Length: 259
Image (cartoon, rainbow, N blue to C red; front, side, top):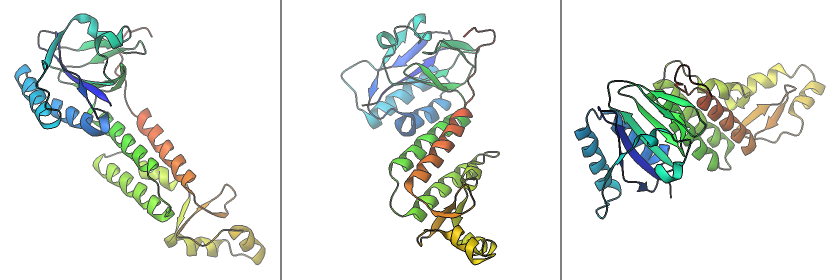
């Protein structure tokens, strides 16, 4: 069970956390709803109301306190993490009027600005920006796609393309579909043109087609020849896109911090 806590830095600088919620608190499930909810929280009263509503809707804990005050040691996640936070995921909003600094499990000093939501996974910094949370959420969705690839290669391709196109349409300047294009997939729309381009003579055409069997989608190999697609190609593509999404996440290091 994936555990998680919802916390705020109060206007006086103190930390207040929820009880640990036990189940599906990873980012692409409850976690994303928590992030979206915390974005709307502007006061301690808002926070308490949000946590109570979240609990009532998803967990119905009524046999334990919902809130706990934390001492300053909780800002340091690099030591005694399981004696303090313990949860897989911690989602925090800074309600104070100045930046606060957390030390994550990698020893990095992470500056969280006022009115900013951030996330940590076992104490390691995840994100502190809505776009970055979107990137990581989409990376999780792509991982789910990867784990559920089918036997219809064209359908696999369409699922990945449509997911990336939707993400790109929402985020100006993001071009995850370019990664797909760079993989040299050959759809039926392109096939006739590419075959003609390689039909300069019979020998070249035989080399180009080789032992490719008929399908609805193909790839060009490193020599410009046609070959069939398998799920390994899509797995590699998804891994590459996920790597790009993760590298886009900005780590807000505290200026002057020594790593």
